[in-house]
Image 1 (cartoon, rainbow, N blue to C red):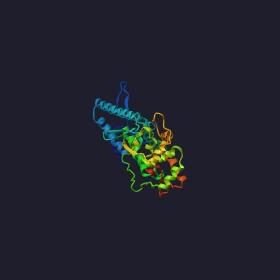
Image 2 (image 1 turned 120 degrees about the horizontal axis):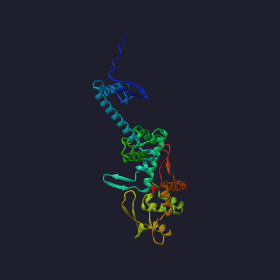
Image 3 (image 1 turned 90 degrees about the vertical axis):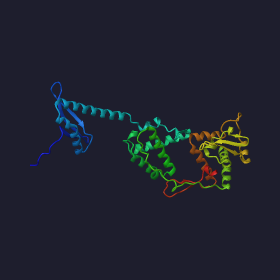
Length: 342
């Protein structure tokens, strides 16, 4: 007959829901009934559970009834404290749907310097965060809280942006950055902290220059504010956002004085005769203030891509190719747009 295994702990181990529990009795209550205890061993492994049972009940096997009761009460209190701490941690979890409202990315921080972001940047950042939340809800529906997102989720989302959405390196890195910043602001463990940036050296997107004849055709094909937009872009070299937000107050003494949105520095640009003629053809407000392109400025605030799209449509109407197919990319790469006027 096989020799029975000696049990070095008090009570009985049983498994419930994949986790081992210890059931034992020690001491009696005032009515003389045995005091029964149920302790969670916190593991699904039998050997680990046995070792934990030995650790918890060894003092009960060697002490007097009073000492055992004191030890049991201490164990119970510690167990309850663990449950309370776990419950509080669960209550303090941040729902993914509420994360942006609680930790919005509204300012850029570099060292001790803080710079407020523009409304459009904030709106774009929020949209990128919501894209991640939407993807995660489809990829892992069980994940509802910020604390439940793990590094594997971040790596899968990074691959999704590159391989499934076929985003450019810059666009993919931007989405990873927004997610990383939101987790940093929340103070929770950041699964995006170790996600490597996709190198842009091997997939650099350039813009092809426009011939002067092509620019002339595009300006002649444009009408209204779009024609003035292209003319200002050609003779100033300003970026699209700076041209759209140009004000009459910025034009004085035959020059344009504009603080650029990218650098925050003011530039001074000479107004060439052709540009001066285009500006003179526009009806200025009586007080000499306000946007030079009011309609496009409102459109830019709603959706900046609409203006870029209209610019490309004008180019295409003149027979100018604006996109190019690239191996490994589902979407055609933009080669000509407003930026080519610079």
